[in-house]
Image 1 (cartoon, rainbow, N blue to C red):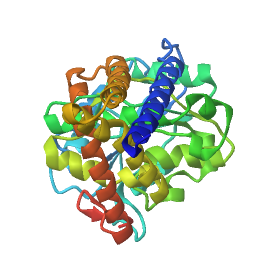
Image 2: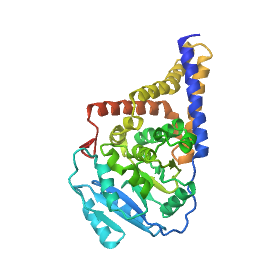
Image 3: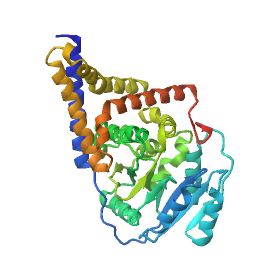
Image 4: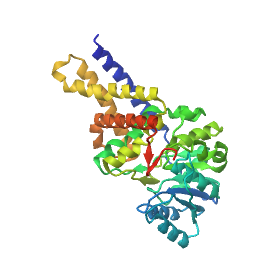
Length: 373
């Protein structure tokens, strides 16, 4: 048995495992409950640094919620554009909007984590929703999220908004979030254990009960991080509370990035932190090489490789295609991009290793600031 044949067999095994994991996770990924009448105050915290393009729309979508007990806190993080003026206008028009006074970023803090921490100190709600300025909310989002958190009995509930992707760069990179989440995180284990490593979340949508947030230490506990979507669920679990994920595709949407430069920089800032381990990064790289890159190479050399190697290579890519189609249909992403799966794998891997280099050299930046500053 040749080395190439052995590698293809290993690739088929890995591809089948991630496909099975994805299908199981999709069946365990709950959709939101119907909204229910409630007087519980929900404090929505929106960090904003140079967000003049987004801030009005996100705040207005929050003020239009059918759950009326909502307050919207905005932290204008020393913006140099019209963000401050727009927020001030919104606050003057509706008392539910409150501007949290900004200050110079303290040493050792990441800007977003500091903004969220400051807003949490001013928030009055029994529940806190940390979100981003580029998210847009359906009118029933808060009511249905609150009902779902109570039905699932979880103090922290996170979800991934429907991702709006317009350019090829966005279509290659953004869907990989779901590919990694659903293919590698066992939802059943997440529900039965408090192990922090068995959790995940999305910084665009973190819905947490006040007592669990305070007990976890909040954003101060990971003040230099650029990945609150991972760090807050882990902190909550360390404090003895459960966290979970639900499918909020129908409740909100977000266009994270615009084109290659934006997507590359955006994912590079925290792609490695999401894995958090160089050995895991190396392992994932090998797995993806065996399940996507190697099979494509074998099929490209169809006439010069013996049977059954082309069959095994095709089986790897077919299983990945089934996995991706199931994901894309569920979260309403373009299905045709599945045909570019090996390309997406290469791009994602390059971003992850670039992120690793930035991490170890202390050069990760976002919004003009380095990590922890």
